[in-house]
Length: 109
Image (cartoon, rainbow, N blue to C red):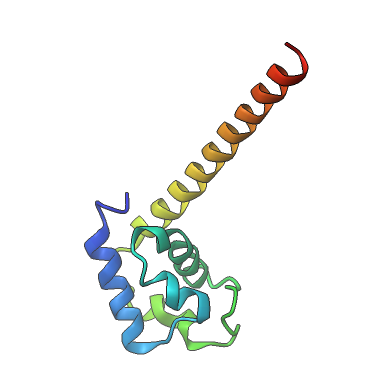
């Protein structure tokens, strides 16, 4: 998902930085590419839905960013966001399964 939309992702970051400043943790996450894409998708989903985002004032003009860019298609952000959530849930389930199998092997041989 990230690789397919990488160009759009960096264009979105660039357009946002022209008018606004990212809050402290997001200013770091926007620089680390794929590894920062999950928190950045959370950030953009929050301002798109006008929900409270960590470290961003509720009355910030950043919440109006997507109102100014109505003509552009940003549907891929929600797909990226939900893909990250789904992959996180899968990793947690695999870790829990591994821990359960390890406990079973250790205590119930």
